Length: 453
Image (cartoon, rainbow, N blue to C red; front, side):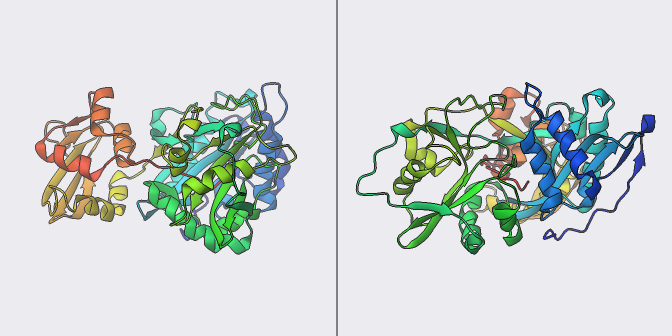
């Protein structure tokens, strides 16, 4: 395990109602757990999802840099058969350069005849508790469909935003292609880490990968896994200048199953999850050249491309009007178990945001009422000295009041105060001090998280 956070103390097995037992997964669960996931995540015609099965089996066969036994839960019935499962992937995200522990929830499944008894909710709460004990300041999940707000998982930022176009519309190369893509190897890891740092600096939140994580990306998944990606190095005559990642967290390059949300793409298409260049390299020269040369395993050249690069990216600007597709976006649901602790962790970022503004060297308190509880931030000459719960919180005594869900969107840069106020009238900046400081402390900034899974 490359993750340096302390392991979670085991508190299982736990006996549940009707002879069910919640426990950690063990190596002997490999086949039964894979079959459970393949059946629950089957296609509409009922055929088992072999790609999900392979994803799970790779965790047993190939290992994972951060997932331990305490992160994989199963529920078995009195006969020892698995009826439900849930998984958490520990990782580190960067908030404007500040590393934060994150627990990402994945691979939830419950057999149809055991639904309605809260098995997923029981496992979810146990995983969230374990993640909080580990010291994670954020927990997240995507495509949440069945959990309510009492889990604390609230809509916060956009996930899987993209643009697309047709290869036939790209300008024709004259005088040969300026770059050549090739498969990445472990010898490229230092270059990948250095180049990825530029992509991370472009957004607010990003997933941090060390050398062990990159080795996992290059060889830790089977080619038929749902989360397999191909990583290509972009080379010029002078050497490597960038990289692209094909495939995206369960969105294969092609064929794209029609039942995947937001992806009506009937023709052969290639999906790009990451596209980054070194400083000093022209995006105008590289982007069309790379797209013209992409191929699909076992197939002819694709007809179109989908760039899953977030809401903003240099490639979008270069391609301009050629991007005729804009698939629907989905969101991250994030939980912050201790909001004051999160704000204390990102204090250097908040302090830096005040420099050069009307609030530079501010001394005083900012009081935020989240209706269920309050937070008080104490500044001294622009330094955030304390962040603590505000016991006597009230809307009238606050500098700002808003629901906790909206607070998540502010902290993670997803929306402005004006946008929230129009959509949610109970989000209010109530004093001049709040109206000046809070938009400065929490400006809008996009994020494009490529999570470790």
